[in-house]
Image 1: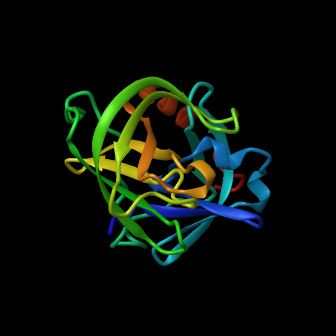
Image 2: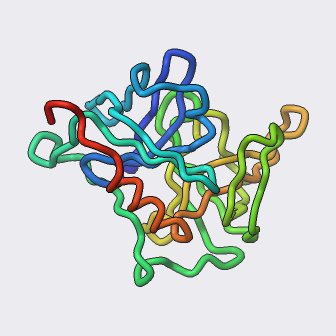
Length: 203
């Protein structure tokens, strides 16, 4: 299981996320609507942290969270952050390419294999609030994403390519089709958000 997988928890629910460096988490923007940093905790493998703040990306379903205290290798040697991709490391995202999605849906870590179906410029959720610009649609016929997986990392060839965002479940029937928020088109926004988020007081 991916050691960088985390659960972002509030008093009213939880979603998934991924630790990308000792201070920062990526997660699903739609989960953070109407939340405050004061009631939010991030839980990893034998660690937990408060959130000092976050920034939503304006055009897609990604948020950048800053932890109140970092996850340092000296204190947590089994935890390895999953770094942001680079142009050189990004694998081809072509139809039929295998994917592995990770999430905390059902309350415990899950690994969900799938394959790329197609890319789409923008996908809008059924509530019209969630928008994914630069979307990747994948098929997961055997172990599909479920509520709670949102924000979890999606990997191709061991490289982080996106975050779980939406599932296709008309009338409550999960069709095994998931929409992924691609990371690479938004790398500049993500890095700018990391730079803008201030340290926690006393850090």
